[in-house]
Length: 114
Image 1 (cartoon, rainbow, N blue to C red):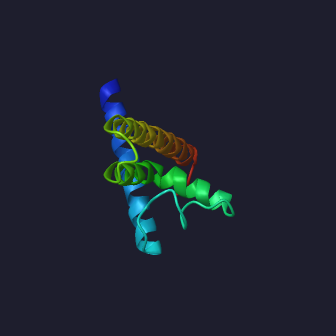
Image 2 (cartoon, rainbow, N blue to C red):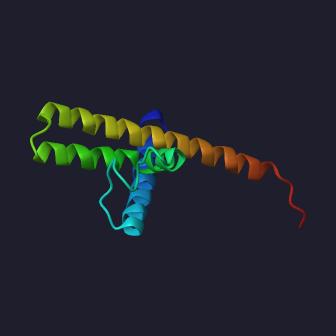
């Protein structure tokens, strides 16, 4: 695979993983995904960090779209949030692919008896 294909694949992996986690979190809580309770809380920092790491790009996109609808941010700020969400999804995909590569390397180096 070339460089462009790897970047697109990493982006697709990050987008898919974040979307699946975000949908699962919305189904479990019954509330829209955003940087608010029950997803992000100062009293549950580790849980908030895990939720943000998993579904952060979609939280950012939802909050930015809501803010734009209410007139709290400009179109330029909305585009900036969109670019940040795209970069975040790409970074998430790179991390997930690195973890998968590391895990398969560990499994491939093990010698299982027949």
